[in-house]
Length: 220
View 1: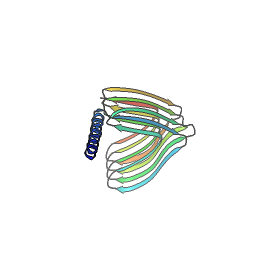
View 2: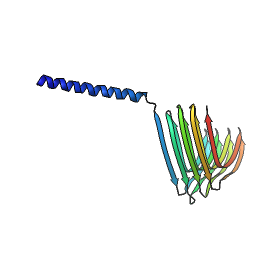
View 3: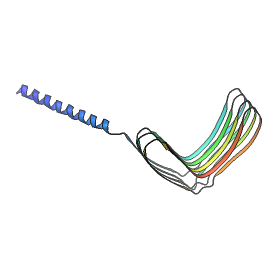
View 4: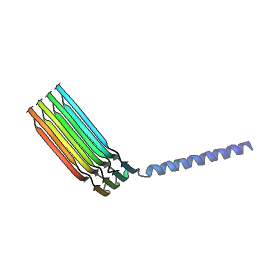
């Protein structure tokens, strides 16, 4: 009786091991898939303020004030399905303000203010990509303001202010791609740069950009 029992136990263990190996082999042959479901609702204000005074910096000076109602970033190396829904309510203010006084800088000066109601950035490198994105901005205003006083800079100076209602970007090298993006904007975009720049040893660039809806799609 005991030898027979040992034989049955050994046979059962062998059967269990074989089933486990079969399942492992099947899972490795199945392509990896990322299923991403994103739902973001913002009903309150978002405010970013930066006040900076610098003097006598031997290197570079950079400053950023950034405010966003909803923001999504996706980066995958798999086959990817993305469903994105972003909504900002009418009681929200998206505000970014930077006040900067920069003097006697040995390197570059880069100052930026950015206010975005809804932002989505999707980057994938698989075989199949399916993206559905719906962005609704009903905010009072994405407002970006930069007040800059820059003097005695030994390199280039870049000043920028950007206000956007909805921003969507997607890039992939997947051979099979389906993209559906909808953007609805009911807000007032305002981008302001007030600047005084003197004694700069490099290039000077100043820009202000206000965009209701923006979509950039790159397939390569």
